[in-house]
Image (cartoon, rainbow, N blue to C red; front, side, top):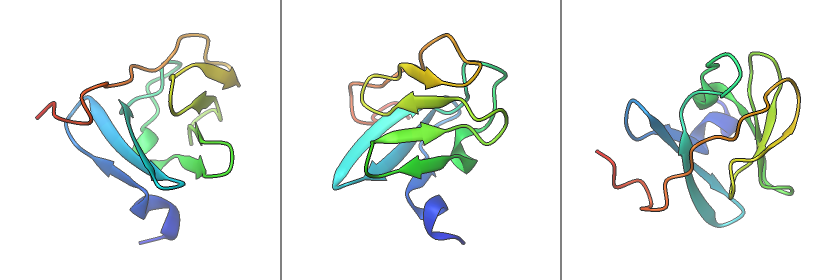
Amino acid sequence: MSKRHRKIEQVSDEFIRVRAAGQEFVIAAACSHRQGRLLYGYVNERTLRITCPLHHSTFDLATGCPLSGPASEPLRVDENGGRVL
């Protein structure tokens, strides 16, 4: 398993948990553009962003807002810390 995948874990069908820079974020498991699986995305710990592996849309981990790429809708962010099981 690569280092980037250890930062991301599936917590339910709808959400993933991302660990970056000593923080945890629980966000939608699928990209809002074409439903790319963010479980296989790239996490930038410096900027706290995740990039979809399908079409390279980039999202802010804290807010879910799209920052680049073709996605225009934000990701759902779980404020309950992953207690969605």
